[in-house]
Image (tube, rainbow, N blue to C red; front, side):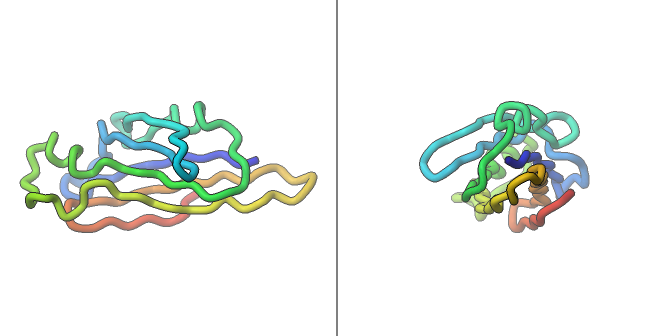
Length: 118
C-alpha cells in the first residue's frame, strides 16, 4: 500500500494556490474531493485516501475556476479548464512498506508542469 499527497503552486502570483478544488479518481469512481489550503496543499487527500492499492489513478485540478476566483483574465473557453494528471502506483513487493507518491502541480492559465515529488 502507498500514500498520496499533492501541492499546487500558482505561477502567476508565485505563491501556493490556496482554494483550488481537486478530486482523485480511480477509473469512473471519485475517491476524494477537496480544496487546497493556504499552503496549496490538501492534507485531507492523504487522510481520506489513506493507504492506496497499486493501480491507475487520476488527480483533477480545477484551474480555470481557481484563476477566475483570483480575477485572472482567461479566454472563453479557457485554454486550461481542468488539468487531469493520470498516474500509476506500482505494486509493492511482499514484506516491503508502501511508497509515498507526491504529485505537485505548477500551473498558470496557459501551461502546467508536474513530476513525482518526494
